[in-house]
Amino acid sequence: MMPRIAAEEQLMAINAVALGSGRIEKRETRRSIERLERMARGERQAAAKATPQMLAMIGISVKMPGMGGGESG
Image (cartoon, rainbow, N blue to C red; front, side):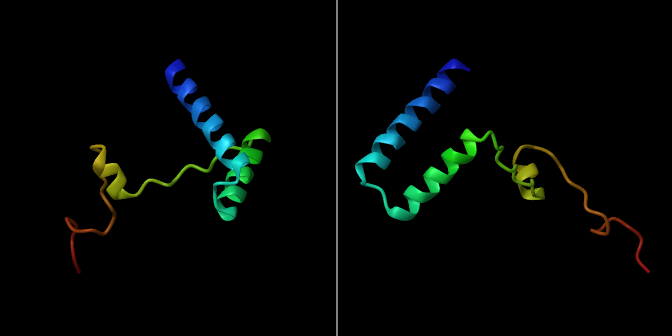
């Protein structure tokens, strides 16, 4: 876990230098600052809702009601 934390801290330092140097577009700068402000307030990122395709990619099968295999009529 420590290498992961160290890598995250290094990326944040790189972003801080890039933001401070003015070499990033204004829109991306604003997004980055807003993201850091949310992190500073302790807000969590919303988890993405898994789609059946996402679940299939990790080996979880999904059966949808009314999608074949049932009786018709």
